Amino acid sequence: MAVRLIVALLPVATTACLIMTFVMATATATALLGTEDTNTGASVNILNYLNESVVIHCQSKESDLYQKAVGPGLNYYWQFHPNVFGRTVYNCEFLWRTKRQDFDVWKGSYYDDRPPCSTKGACSYKIAPNGFYYALKSEGDQPPGTNLGIAESWEFYKPWLPNPSSV
Image 1 (spheres, one colour):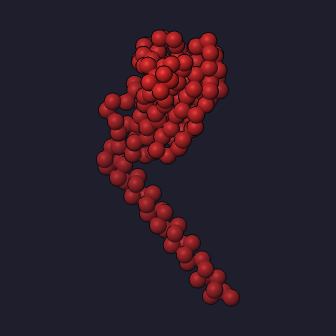
Image 2 (cartoon, helix red, strand yellow; image 1 turned 180 degrees about the vertical axis):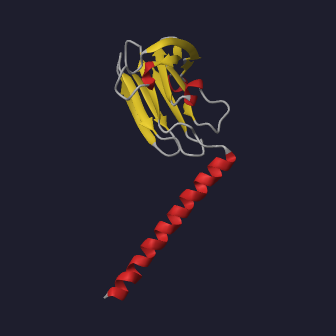
Image 3 (cartoon, one colour; image 1 turned 120 degrees about the vertical axis):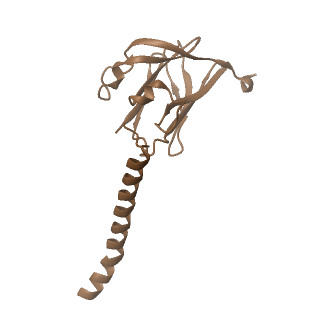
């Protein structure tokens, strides 16, 4: 019986050893390549400043947050942990009346063209009738659920585009 138990545990021990080797190799490669994302956690907060609902669909390669209707004055918020190689990207598509827009709302350190807010982890966007704004300095960097979306200043980011499929 003892021999069978040892044999049964051998695959578990081998798997644990392989996982540990992968984790150590990943950490070493990250340190050598300098590609580690400095954020231990990140978030995106999208505030609807329109007088009606907007449809938002956000996703990354790893997760689809599905399409959601966000009512007037409400926000759409999520947290995530960027991958260690800095390649996490969240893209959102926005639909409102006969208008649309889509852009990357968060990009990891691997990308040179990432939004400025990605460097600090938290990104806040405001949806307005003329387009999208991002927070230059946001209180949203505080713990989740506290002062979400309060920004000291907003900068215009992207206009709405016509939605050809709504014709």
